Image (cartoon, rainbow, N blue to C red):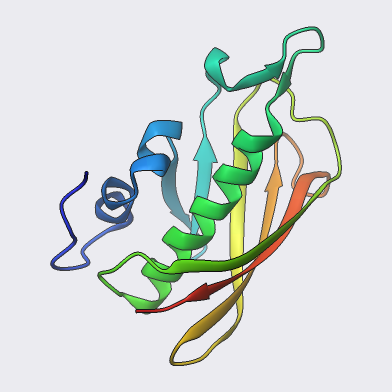
Length: 138
């Protein structure tokens, strides 16, 4: 189990606090003042070896964790928000290359945040998946 975050100083600190994000190998960098998340390709993330294609659970987990990390970054909160609901639409096959993701907080109150997420590979205008989620803030 990862140690709790006592202060928020970077997205890498937040990634270290979310074990599944760390297991997947999620990384981030800032682009235009917003976090851009990416998942380097690893063969263990392949679900369909015949195509080959990324496992849908990996894509969903990537987007869910990107949203958690984005909420932590935007709110500068030191605790991991809890998921209330999550809905994903798979639009294209996730090829065996790097996956990118960006999130947008649509509305954030004192207790709940509503987040939209988009994942793509080579072309941002051709998303692999889009999702939305609600998170309970501590």
